[in-house]
Image (cartoon, rainbow, N blue to C red; front, side):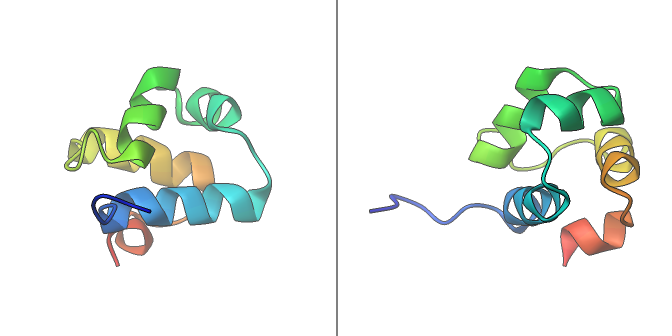
Length: 70
C-alpha cells in the first residue's frame, strides 16, 4: 500500500545497509552524519541528498556513490 515509489537512492541505501546488517543509527555513525538525515533519505523525504552526504553514506556502506545511484 505504498502511496509513492521511493527514490532509487533511498532503496539502494536501505538495500546495502540491510545487506551489512546495520541499523540506520549505526550507518549514521559510520557515515558521520545525523541519524535523522539517514531516516529522511531512506523514507524519501529527502529525495536528492547533497553529493557530500552521498559520499559519506557510500563510504559508511563501503560502496561507491555510483552504486547508490544505479
